Image (tube, rainbow, N blue to C red):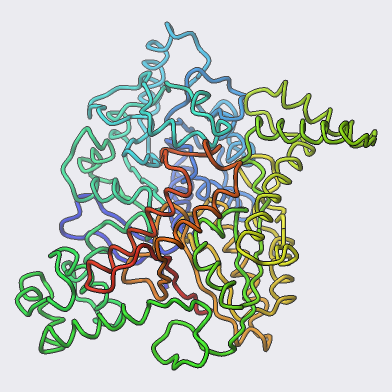
Length: 639
């Protein structure tokens, strides 16, 4: 069965768009198309001219092409490739160089001749760039043009580094980078915006559009707005990806998160016949009420008929019957007892009443996700007498600034001096770490000693949070999953040891509840890898008797929340509880007043969390339910 959710085209979508549940399956589909093209060209004795992209989106495509080369004999000897862009200025061997990216992610692992791949030079004199760009395009033209162009898309709609404002006839050139593009790239430059280049050489829109076939990839919610605008909106220089509407053989390949703003995902009943099950009904009614700015119980037959929901209305007969059913579903999701309410009828509650005292594991991908994403629920579970454990899955060490590490190293040295503690080995380690940090070069990977210091800072903050919430420190478990410990933003693949560590803790605690970060839309981030580890561990253990009584609840991260129709448990917070959660977040001082990987969102984590939780409560109120200060939301994963 295909992993694609829908076939294209959809009538009002101006670019064919194929949606997949899983980015990995989507990537396999694209890699197969590229491989088939390479083989077909080889049979004809011709070169296959590819336009290639960098960034996180194509990595899984390249990984699949490498697998096909190693396991299926796919040869790249007839491939000639041209990359879209390169930062300027940028040395070819720099960590952030696209030359280095392509060699590591593809070229060095297949049999493409070295003379057959071309990437813009980021280290040529600026007065030579114009001539270089002309020759770059001329080389493509001399080979008959691009047979296939692979694209990603920026959060602002850029393709290549053709930023908003780029014209459809733009040529390969030096481009000033948009602030949002530079902010999104900060993770690759040590989290410091000042280190991100302000310019880049990019293939122009006109040359991209001349490719015989264009496939654009997009994963995650951050891309959803621009994807919808490009596919459904007008052609505009404000969203350069919309220029692909003019291409006769373009395809967008996206995951469900990136497709979430498309009409066929957001309001599928307006596009095609749908099955009116409970979930679809809830989605439609919530959408209608919010669109009309009416509480659910005030929706009328006319509201349904006038807004494409006559089929739903016909199934119930009266709006009142639909309204009350959906209202009750929302009402039943609200609970102040996330661990279940003792001695209460739990028929319509999201959690079981028994056992009254539950063993709980909160899995936290980084050392602060527990308090940021579900701090109010964490506190409720403790206050209501449950045996709560927190599993900090990674050290979080790369998110600690060098200044913060030096401050702690100085403290240890001064502490030892103050109390006359002499330990030559300790002194040598700290002297070495301090010397490294004071002389560290841009993008240089931290030494193991420095990473340990940064990890200890995060560990201490996590312990402080646990004490603040009220659980014993021995209930804080630091897994330090190996996949994370590369010292770089780029992590290692999830391995057996990561899964075994996770499974081992679950088997030791034998929980009745597991809470996990359910950021399923993020295929390359730490949260997604950590969730994969939990799911793999649960798969290993699900035959055990204790797992029959274990429920898994998924929370979201600091930037986004579950859609209102998806929420199965909403835990309300009073104004005092919101302040309490904020104070818990403040325990993570290394992540306050300037986060290393801030991205384009300038808010601090406590602000993001409060805005998100406040918005969830506001949605419930708009739909006609009780007004709360804030709410944390969860979806149950039924394994």
